[in-house]
Length: 217
Image (tube, rainbow, N blue to C red; front, side, top):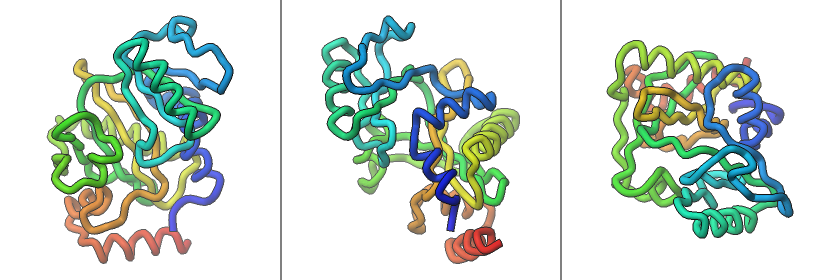
């Protein structure tokens, strides 16, 4: 089930995803792609600390760090390069984190992700009780509609099909930023997409049947 190889490959590449978001007017944090051996200076790219450093094609937030000092930034770059030869450096958005499932081109109810400590890293994604998840997220009707519209737009920009989950940050000033897309989101009964489906009155078995049905066309 899920997207084909092209959409999956595009979404896995965070640098390419960011470029396609920019080109298709899907708001995403400012940033740049960095290859081994290149100048890592933030100033050269008009950026300042804190920032976010992550491997370009990693998953589950492995290797993602949020350095606040120059020393931490240099260590973060070295750590990210230990996973692969291309990394992404982007501006840090302080605010609330959300995820939006898109199934068959339709955005599902938004879920808010609030880690009890730190950010939504590998530990907080997989350690029970480390994150508070609220669905539907507490947003205004306009905010909900706007984020869902961006999710569908991002879904199309990355040439995805059938279903995916797009992650967002909302800054303290209310601006929204699409971070990336997951073309094979977690599918246990307590995962994010099943929780969104549950908010629509769809149980886990029904959701599984739905994903099979849309992928069989």
